[in-house]
Length: 131
Image (cartoon, rainbow, N blue to C red; front, side, top):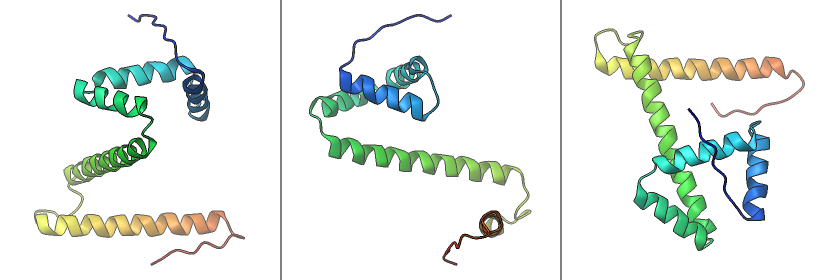
């Protein structure tokens, strides 16, 4: 079951919302729904702090926190992917120490494969990679 909720926002926020929805190929309604879902799932203290930063127009802190949250999200994704790979038992057999080394070697091989594929797809373009 769904409910309809309306909200009034200033012109700047409405414009930003429309831009985000367009860039993400989503409807404005879907972007609003996602934002509300995320916002109400946050702890009250965090919601209050974010609203306070917004009211103070403290863009520097907002950008800094955004970067930190993206870094935390990347760490969680990496840990999840690592655990998923480890669960497949394709690396390291019974030796836990070699499992991490094997995964790193496989990641390196995959990176090189992607690099080589990119070179093949753009024959006239020079790509400089550090090795």
